[in-house]
Image (cartoon, rainbow, N blue to C red; front, side, top):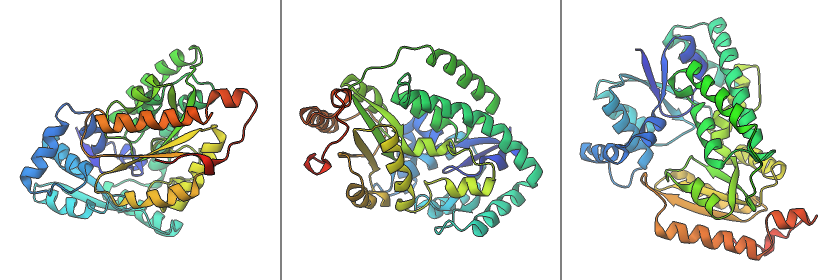
Length: 348
């Protein structure tokens, strides 16, 4: 089985065209019952304790899974990735670099895509055919997303799962599409959910394994998963290069914010949960996010895979209580009052 791992979303069409089994190493790490052990193994190998848990987890996932080839995104993702490539090369892993240009230049991005195509020995016709195949699945996952925010039939956790899985289609597009089809049949017939508060989750996917059910147990539901939605290539763009130019995650915070602000308004979001990973440079972007968003923001930080700790649970509960005390949520929308003064809302 020709498995190729990668450190974050890449042009998946290339791996599919090359008949490789795509493996998002983040998904291998976070879904493993040995995720803590993977991080420990990375630290035993010499990784500092104050390095992002995802980088240590990816290292552990590569070593444990036996993957011998990976695509490492050296620009547009974690700043530690270059060093990770070098360390894994000592383990006999063939690490292929791929870079998203910071300025989103189309010519530079096309050059990077064609370099990756050259490495895997595929031409444009095969890549375009693979894109058509994957876009059919992405279209169905967009319907799951629509059922989440427009018809209120899908939980935040279900929305998270199906969109995250589009990064590698669980290694098997056909099997994953069957799973999507079966879920859509079930979800479309559900009664609408009744949570009082509508939340957006922005930032990297959570390292906490219970954040979505915890929010829903307190009357709040995530109707917008920012980065996970981006993995699913949500805009329906037919040109491959333009698709990955529109993809917001690898570029500057202002490109991301344009999408976030639009979706917060469209999905009638009451408040935002911004997740930041310990020791990640993206924590600094929280300052900009707080200045630009017009709804209340709660910033949460995580380090290792785990359930929510007691302090984080208390902070979430306090934030949700504050929103309800200020009249934010379904009651306010149902009464016909669609405005609120964000300057009067607390931020935590």
